[in-house]
Length: 294
Image 1 (cartoon, rainbow, N blue to C red):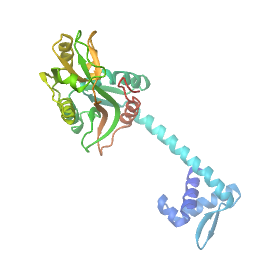
Image 2 (image 1 turned 180 degrees about the vertical axis):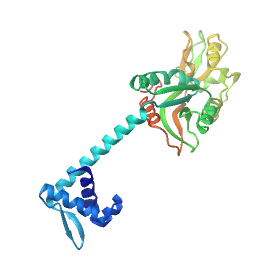
Image 3 (image 1 turned 135 degrees about the vertical axis):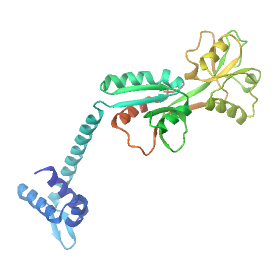
């Protein structure tokens, strides 16, 4: 008995025809007949009934069929593991990410991955989301961390959610907790001048019929946090972008929650090496990392 004989038997039993099984397996019908005959001779039993209406398992053949299917499935799993291991030998994963995810999300995942697969080279480039997209298009990187959603040219997976929070200067007069739109309307803000984050905040204010008073527009999140710490205004930032938050700076949630979805993206319709999918599996295990959720 061998794997090929079992594969032939399963095909005939499932399809009910020697000729159809031969087409599926891309062999001659005589080869199928010989394989079944050899298997039945070795076992000393009849596994199939033959007739005008095709070939069907006997009662014993039905029980043998279940075992044969399990053997073939086990063989497929063995082949998968072996091929995966071969593909991971000397592999490489090239990552690109916007700053806050690169700073706070990726390092522990990269460390865990490299510990498990020390033979795989991992590189990381930090850039804004549009530049990450372009690097994916050009094949310069394999996986990009970007806010979602993205265009259909990318396959994406959500790996976390990041809450937008309000940063209030130290020593500020007490404000309602939770914050109200009325309290926010009296504040001047240092706005994060960063493409998607900027539009997300402005759209959120407009959606709820509020006016956003902007005193400064600053591109660097660390500069914004420092300005808040010096009492120059309040700010609305994704929590990860605000870290580390200086002592004394108050952190509050918005009256209506706002969050950005962070995802891993790869270029669609491209054959990626095994190492890329293994790293994606590691990323998908991150879950949500906002403080209010697991």
